[in-house]
Image 1 (tube, rainbow, N blue to C red):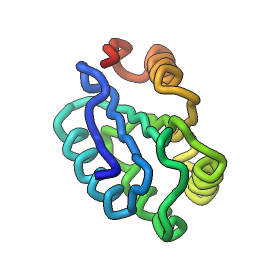
Image 2: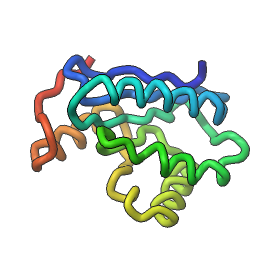
Image 3: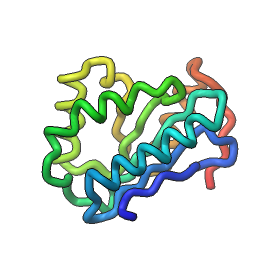
Image 4: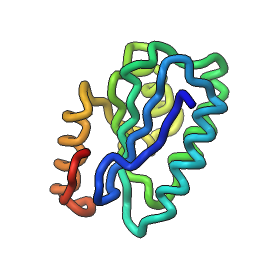
Length: 137
């Protein structure tokens, strides 16, 4: 599977979603099922790191996925989503999502590395969101 979804840390406050080269929207939708399973397994807010470092492009049909992505982002346990490895195409797509669905603008951020993404999430938790304890893998 070219999109994988797993816990990133032992305290289950961050989920890592990795997009490998050649991923499809069908694989993305399957990963959301797993994401929801993980989110439903805990009583607290969980942030995600979405890793695009090895994925150079988006699959065809991307514009038709905007509404589905917006719906997926409404899970009550889903917190901040930090995208790592976003090339210019992915950044444009993120900006379109934020323009079409303004509430998502505050839920999506971009980082240059996994370490930076983790630091961003920990900083936000220290500023008042949830548990600041985190153990990286």
